[in-house]
Length: 109
Image (cartoon, rainbow, N blue to C red; front, side, top):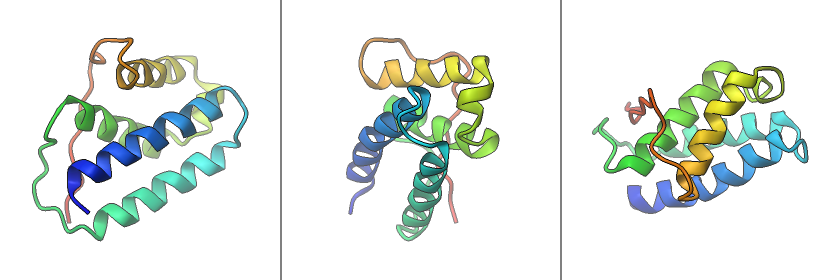
């Protein structure tokens, strides 16, 4: 699987998972599991370049790192975090601008 295809598929899934957790139609542990599974699959690609290829990928990695750092439960408890994640989702959906302070780098082995 090529990196661009991997990211494009995961962005669609990330939108669904984060939106569902925010809307409380999915338990946050499911988002945490998605993050872990995605990182394991990414590691199997053996990527050595840490630079994202475009803005969408940069925002994707930013969101992945933020949810990993804060935990998906923060989407219920931290309004600032929830707002930041919504900004990323709006960018993915083409209705928002590039998130301020977005720092997304690929994890490398």
